[in-house]
Length: 148
Image 1 (cartoon, helix red, strand yellow):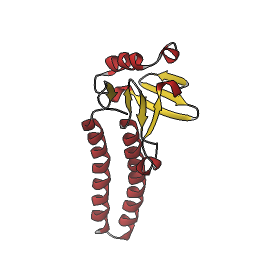
Image 2: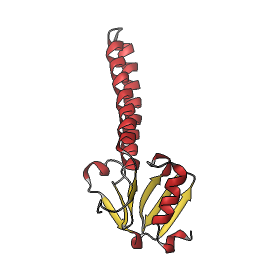
Image 3: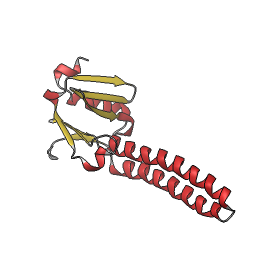
């Protein structure tokens, strides 16, 4: 996707901030586990269980944030990383607007479908505010999708 055309995306500081919160929580819980180890094995086991639960949840949340913040919409089409662990290793996915077959809009969430493949846009994270981002998104959509 070329970068010389107007595009709609999410500012990098939003992604970095959200990922920073996820990492910070996991680090604090990890330090708590180390502190709990000083009070005996029972406390350490509870701390390890808490670390696994909190670490697993915030690990999943960090992957989800990375996925949602990777969206890029342009006049040519839509581009986004793959969801979940695949997003760490797979190349960025791209679809031309002519390849998008369906659209679903619900609140701040917009889903664009190319067959069984889904691109997710969370307009609340966009760099120009919700209302302006929705207007800009509708401007980018081709006529066969804009009627939806």
